[in-house]
Amino acid sequence: MRKRIMPRPTTRLRRISACWAFLPNYRTVNETGVYTAITAKQKLIIASKDSFDYPLVLLGAAFAGISQLDNSDPSYHQGVEGFAKRLAANYADQATR
Image 1: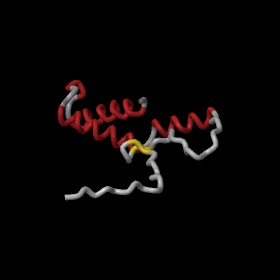
Image 2: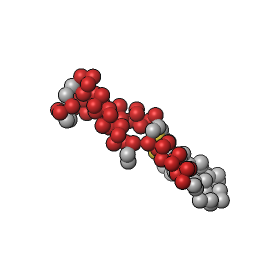
Image 3: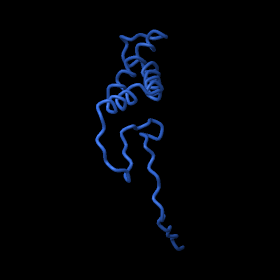
Image 4: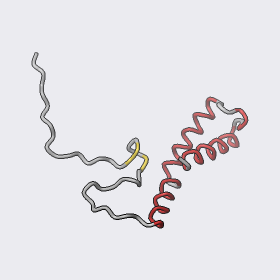
């Protein structure tokens, strides 16, 4: 049986500027663009978008749910209060990375 050799694509695929395809990455640069230094205000905008983006809340909620199921830190306790504490801790962890 002969192997089929796939031809290489002639066009470059556009790279997704996201981490894991659902977390936006605001720190990417267009390869073809002309480099210009960004201002302090633009740096703060990028930092705020990285820290306070809605996927981070969803990711924090997912990690909080896993921690709640495993009861990985019993000091948070169980129930809504424990989940809220875990959610806040996980969101803060994701926002400060």
